[in-house]
Structure formats: structure tokens, C-alpha cells
Length: 565
Image (cartoon, rainbow, N blue to C red; front, side, top):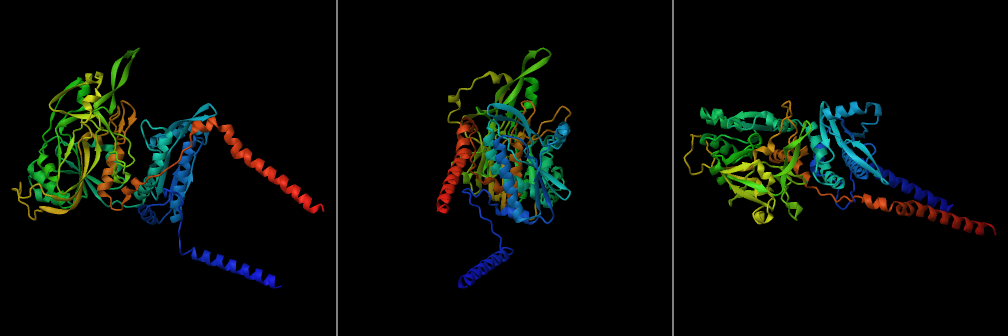
């Protein structure tokens, strides 16, 4: 009787503890991430974004179907990340969809995805030496109310294996989804001014960039023509914008225009400069076969010098170059094109460093970026903090201008000794701090009430190539995706880089910092799996069955021996 009471008391105690723990769970929420790289721990920025979601937010993930193991890994990591978001906010509703589930609608479905910009990927399935082709859609679409946003799940990396792309993509997942959630759930607040009036790029040539920026920010053209008549009113109007973008000006700025831009920066406005210091265009070179590259005077040298940089009027030749496609002959009725490395069009990668924490989130986890007739930036000493975002390769050199540029240069074979020790020239620099006005202790071009010589903390990014932001046009003069080269069918990371620059300069919730997240993702060696397939099956399937069989036989024999007496 005493034992029964004790057992009943223990049972009631356990039930009571479970009830208390369950009740406390309604008020205290904690998830534990046991991975070494804290891969499933959401950043505070992501948590802040997801807390603002008050209505159902739908995520359709199209990474479903029959595809290689690397994509299975990407699928699993995507699902686990979305489960983390859902754990913190049940309004996140996600599903995995196989868009090609119905074979009879295959062509129609693929065309719909193409029209939406969700480009599929052809992958090869290799199972025991048998190869088959499959189509994969590594995309997700986030919908919140009447707004939707595309999420690329697989990052573009030229020359990388699928496994390498997957590792890089997993590192990018949290940022990709957090950015999409922020886009569809947050109302646009900040304003971007596209500066006009000095021969900047036409809207059609930056159309893809404008389309992308418009998803998160208000954007509008801002002409400096009114500076001549009413400079103070122009400055006042410009200060209503949070960021000013000057995309490849070709005409010199007047001193009055410079004063407006200078005072905008000194008073806390952010600026993004994309400047060609040398007059040379690829389109005109393709038409004539040769052209003269000469310095372009934009009347900006003294301003940049005051801020702490100098853009040199030299061209960079880089052995690590992007290709151009040239007609080399005819076969039948079709013109034959051949790709050649073009040394005046460098392939720029983020600045390499052993300390990953020192890499700016602007360029973290980025693929190669295409530059065209770019010039070196000299970093000067002053009180402004400067971060080199991009630089040419170690095997590059500067060429003074004026200089003749000829397409026949593709036939030259560069001698690496000629480029040794002359490279690593900055081509994109971030400047942060309290800027001194270029007109400090100087006569002002126009009389200004409340002139500010030293102002608030501000930021600016200077890129020594205006074509980085320029998109190509198709045969119907419609804009193509920024970074896509229609002549070589290569997709470069120009769009991601420029958008990162904008997000960093305008970021008020730390979203850009998620890009610095590092994930150590183990990937199976498919070749080794194929070679050791039988052995692996024996160890993982056969051996446990044998152990279970032996255990069963031993248990049966012992049971018979015990109860046969």
C-alpha cells in the first residue's frame, strides 16, 4: 500500500512539473541553436523585421522536384530557415512547390516563369553513371497583401561548381529572405535623387537599377539646372532627399553646382558617385575599331581631393579581364563570333583579406563585377575613414592618357612580368565621417545663408567607372538585367554590388550587415559517394540489420533458456 502511495505521489509530481513547464512556455520563448556556426540563429535585424508582420505573409518556394544532392541541401537549409522565421511569427506561411509537376503544362509554366524573371536552371543528374537533364527553379516568391518580391535562392558565381554555389547561397539566404520580407512589409520612407543636368546616363540605360531601387525607396530625377538661377532653393529642395546618385556625368560641374552638392554632403546627405575620369566608350570603339582615350575634365578634382581621394586620369589594364565577343569570320550564312579577354575591362572581385570581419558587408559574398575603362583611385590621408571596397587584381597596371585603344589589342599576349608589382589599385572607395567643406576658408561661388564648413556624420561611395551601373539594351531597345552581357551571355554581380551600396548608404535597420554571416556547410563528395556506393549501403543499411538480427537471436535463446526450466 505504501509503494502505491509513493508511486501515485511521484506521478502527480511529474504531471505537476509538466503542467508548470507547459504553462511557462506560453510566456517564455527560447530556441536553442547547437550548430557551431549558429547557422539557424536569426540576427536581431531579421527578428525586428519579422515582428512587424501583422498579416499572413506567404512564401512560395519552387525548389521542389528531382535534382542533385547539392540542391537537396539548399532545399533543406531553406526549409529550416523558414521554420525559424515561422517559429518567431506564425504569420509566416510557406510551402514548397514543384512548378513542373504537371508534364502537360510544362512549356506554358516555364514561359510564365520566364516572363516573371524567374529564370530556370538546367542541371545534370548523375546516378550510378546514368546522366539525365532536369530543370530546377531556384526561386521563392514572397507575398504580403498586394505586394510581392522575388527571392533568388542560388547565387550566380561564374566558374564555380554547384557545391560552391550552394555554400555561398546558404550564407546569403537569411539576407535574401529578410530583405524580401522588409520590401513587402515596410512602407517606403527614404528618398533617392538621380542627379541630372551634367550629361549623366539616360534613364533607359539605368532602367533596371531604377526598377530595383523603386521597390524599397522613393526615387526621382533631380536636375541641377536651377542652380544658376536659385542655388539656395535648389540646395533646400535637394535636402529633402536622403541619397543623391550621380551616374556617369560627362559635362563639367560649375562651382555653384559643386557648392550645392558639397553642402548637401556636409549637412548629412549621402552620395554615390560613379565617375569616368577618362573619355572612352565601348560602343564607339566597336563601331570604329579604334579610338583615342583622353582625360575628361569634370571640375571635381578639388572637391574629391578635399574629401580625401583623387581619381587619376589613367586607364587600368588587368590580366584578370572579362571577355568581349568579336566577329572573326563566317561559316555558311552566319557570322562567327569569338570571345577574347579584353584587358581594359577588368573582372573585379571584393578585396581579399584573411580577417573576414574586415570585409565590408557591401561586398561580402559577392561574385565578380564587370568594369569598363576604369581608372585608379588614390586614397589620401585626412580625418575621413576610408574603406577600399574593390580594387584591381595584383596583375594590373595603369596606362597614362591620352592613348590610342584598338580592338586588335585582343591579339596581344600580356607578359605577367610587365604587370607584376603594379596592381591592387582601388576602384571603389567608401568614405565615412564629418566632411570638411571644399569651400572652407575659400570664397563661396554664391552667397549662402548658414554656410556649413564642418557638418554632421555622413557617407559617400566613389566608383571610378560609370558603366558599372549601366544596363545593356536588347534588339527592341528594352533594358536587360544590370550585369548581363548580351554578347557573351555572362551575368556579373554589378546589380548586387550597386544595390548593396544604396542599401548601405540608406540602411537604418542594419539589414546590410546580415551579408557578413559566415556558414560552414559540409557538402558530400558525389564522386566518392559513387565509388563507395556499395560499401556505404552495407555499412549504413546492412550492418544495422545484421546487428538487429544477432540481438534478436541472442534475446530469443536467452528467453528460451530462462523459461524452459
